[in-house]
Amino acid sequence: MTNILVAGGAGYIGAHTCVDLFNKGFRPIVYDNLSNGHAEFVKWGPLEIGDIRDRRRLDEVFAKYRPAAIIHFAAAIEVGESVRDPAAYFDNNVGGTLTLLRAAQSAGIDKIVFSSTCATYGVPSAIPMSEAHPQSPINPYGRSKLIVEQMLQDLDRYQGFRSFVLRYFNAAGADPDGRIGEWHLPETHAIPIAMDAALGRRPHFEVLGTDYDTRDGSCVRDFVHVLDLADAHTRAIAHLLNGGPSHAVNLGTGQGTTVNELLAAIRRVVGRDFPIKYSPRRPGDSPELVADNRLAGCTLGWSPRHDLRSIIETAWKWHANHLPH
Image (tube, rainbow, N blue to C red; front, side):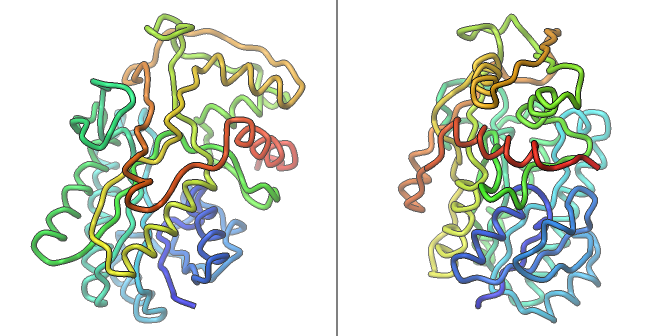
């Protein structure tokens, strides 16, 4: 089995990608400091505990496993937190990535799949958003990811270090067998919060903004199943290992769902009602984020296979059977 280093592989998307890698004949080597990840999510390969800013630890792990390529998920991801403490986001997301890249180069590795985000685009100038959309992030989180994308472009241009950048829209859903799921501490993502409200673990779900220029006044988002994201990462690794060139592509369904539509769909699927509180807009939220995903189809042969109902059903199975810590 070909070893793939998965930085941040104990986290939500990382762990699901490890399942997909393992099922397709790769051996995922998880490298994670467990600040946001969970050791119990590492079931499909070894866990090496370490920080991407720790060059000595990275060198040890690269020497031990000699991975053929890297998938890089390890990042701080909360927009609001990035506004409160921008330096922490640049330290981890940019500085840590640079340390990871330098260690990889020293180990003779020149291929990476990078977990990026539609937050690099900023406020949409057109919907759906294609990869030609200007990249003008409106928060430090998005900017930290864009800086890494630009670093990777230069490494490719000047040193032949190839990368596949995957810009996610809204990751959601869970492993259908209920082994792993979406588990953040604290939780800030819409579907897990709604599940907790339906389970009585929260007093209500809070809709942030009712006056957007959308069909019902709430934000529109493109929810893409985490299994589809995992599949794209494995395809991107295969592309690079087969000598394919660098690319940057969107990962989304191309279908927008308002927050109110999402809540209605959750109530239908889980068969429970729950209180909803309506509050003012949150600074930095875009009214509408929907992907143009055609380039991912052209470059990876990728297309999303799971719909919103599948996202909600698999998420519900995980949350209903998983007691929060």
